[in-house]
Image (tube, rainbow, N blue to C red):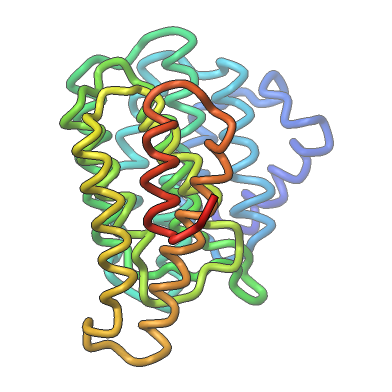
Length: 280
């Protein structure tokens, strides 16, 4: 099915609130949608393909086996890693809308467990590798809509971090991979990326499996990167952007947890205050 035909079909589906019972073979149609999930047309990609898939996943339209297959496709080299490393090209849309399928799938798993430990281990490995490898961190792209890799990936991190299969070392790896996007020098985040990444970090911390020394080392690493940005050898613009992105993230993280008395948040607040050099 070509993109034009698919768009027309999905527009008809939208008129009936994406009702799956209006489709003879929803899973077969989902396979066509996965082929076009990175289309540069923002209406087809975002408003139709993504919304249809997310709606159907949430409504339990797919069987466990079909959901696993959708997850495998989203994580494969033709989707999450499609032309990974490119910057400024349309390939980013395939990657960022593939990673955005992880949250609804993982959410279903929390309602009815169908993924096993080895499945979660694969998601962890692919997601952390993606966070380290994604170089295109544009937010909104003129005429083509949202790319938003840091925010979309952060949403996936937030859902994955809730899995009981993830232990301390896994959460530490996830937090480290997220931090790579926090310390991004390539662009100044202006589309709430800091808030989405802070929320993902909070979810990791809320598991309360990381030691205080590990948390202190993590925040020190962020602050050290921020204060030492001038020694990174980048341009003045890159240095300023990196410093700004780290500061915004730490501020967002602080405000999200400022009234949370659960462990480990009181200690994290003190560490953040020290790093931000805020008095009071």
